[in-house]
Length: 438
Image (cartoon, rainbow, N blue to C red; front, side):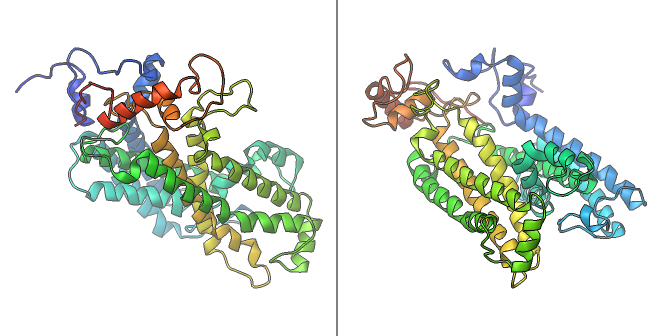
């Protein structure tokens, strides 16, 4: 049996990477080379460590499921008093039914995650199971807890110690075990999603980092197409939350739209209740404005009014990470509102929140379109255009704004456009051959 050429060969084979001879391939001029070595390794080997993290999470939750199956304490879906209950679909489910299922899924999922991480991928069955687990854990089982934590994170401590809104006995009165368990399940769902994506890319012989392969790029993933459908996604995302924002602003100013006069009076008499609704509406409106940055130039290059960064490229992750988090946590909150009863006189309490499903889905699509337009050369496979500045300059036909600093995208659009066009035609750096990704 032939011996591997280098110690890295085994890991590369597991990740469907080309064999490494002598040293790893790193495209010259790639900004990743300036990152610390351990951070670069974490980013390049994310399919490996996320797969192991998924297995560890699954085994741990499987052990908890076994413990609850034999009558262990702290079963997270047990009946509790109303002020400690969640709106999860499993709330109130009996332990003798749900706990064994959690044990089987957890322990079996741990084995599945290891198999998906270590073996050569075959077929679609395993990635389908992983996708179902990801959707169930991250989107179906949780309730509004995730969006509440994201939206009210700066105010959680204030709520806990000031009693606004309502009396609070500390952080434990807000993040109690039933809610913390939903956050833990959400984290597991995200890990399973990452494992499914990595396995799917390996099954297509694509680069596990960027998803690109030797196959021709699908038209809908080109920057031009992504901009077109991204604009539609942004429009849908902004419009979907308008009913929620309108009703909460109307309630604050004394107009009980979609609720009875008695319920509006109760809200007005509860300290901070109307103010909280107004604050959430303002956050939604602010988010709608920021969402436009996913398809406008000021989302890629800092505008002039941000004088200390004017003309410099906006780091893509600065938009992608928060937008992705908000998009994902909106969907379970919308599903929760869908499951709640609709009172004819108080329909506006829950009905506008159902549209969060649409909002989250559209925001996720717009964010993905932004990613497709901003991605550059992959540090693992070398596919893609050379630099973000080339992308910006190529799309800035005739634009002369921005900073006068050397290296600003606004300094030389004509020169960069030609270079970017050649790179886009070749699929990578001019004259460079693509390394194989699997």
